Amino acid sequence: MIAFPTGPRATVRVPATSANLGPGFDSLGLALDLCDEVTAAATSGTAVTVEVQGEGEGAVPLDERHLVAATMLRTFKHLGLAAPGLKIKCRNRIPHARGLGSSSAAIVSGIMLADALAGAGLTRGEKLALASEIEGHPDNVAPCLLGGFTIAYSTEDGAKAVSLDPSPRIHPWVFVPQVKGLTAAARAALPEKVPHADAVFNLSRAALLVAAVSRQPARLFEATDDRLHQSYRARGMPESAQLLKELRSAGVAAAISGAGPTVLALTVDDRGVPEAPAGFAAMRLDVADGAAQVATSPNE
Image 1 (tube, rainbow, N blue to C red):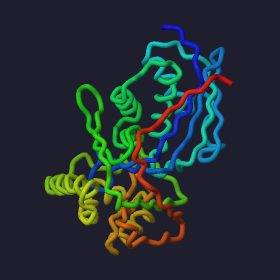
Image 2: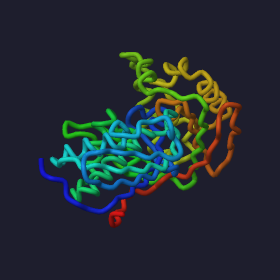
Image 3: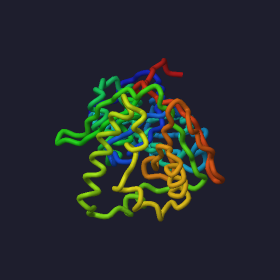
Image 4: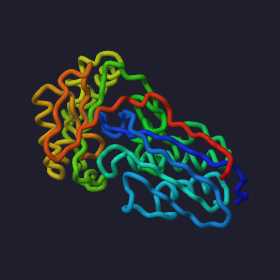
């Protein structure tokens, strides 16, 4: 492997994300202005140390097993570089294991930091493909990396995505429960086959959702309906499923955020803002419409 070059420190700011948005399973996503900030510096030797403030503090590994660190090491290998020692500082705001893309944020952070420290100049497409390979699907990493409303898809050459600007009239709310969820368990709840009629239903709603988010927000309620995944996962998150039912019964364009258990509500002009029930914390978030950014500075 090529020796790692000496270089500056790097800091990246990455947004939370909400994937699926109802019918767009593993393909549609939205970047939310609730951001983690991660700083990394190369050190002599091979030791990896991680400091965490905020979400995940006291609950995640503080060595090379930490997801940011592990992703950086994998990215260096991808670049053909011998990894240096690393000193990483995480200031986390994105809730962990709640369906708001905390793992995708860590993966995108790791790729962008490694690329910046190495001065490799990976393209945005290369970063997306690598992030999707590590995460296993592109629906969260795409909006985290690109910002805005994204349509992600997989090809023989890896994941690709298109980013669109959502209507400024749309204001996301998230209802974050105290309980955590596990993506693996949520995926295990899905059947291997679904009725053809349900697949057609979701195709129509996902197509409509692109128009609703970008140009016709009045269509959001119809566009966020789903028959592919939310009902199958309801047993594993009964409180969230009940909140989702109540919100949609009130005419709110609501969906389970990612694999849950957070519930996402898309309001128009802040009309019909729902109250958070017991056990949930409500947050009004703006759409993060810009791409994730990384900045470098001289070593300390």
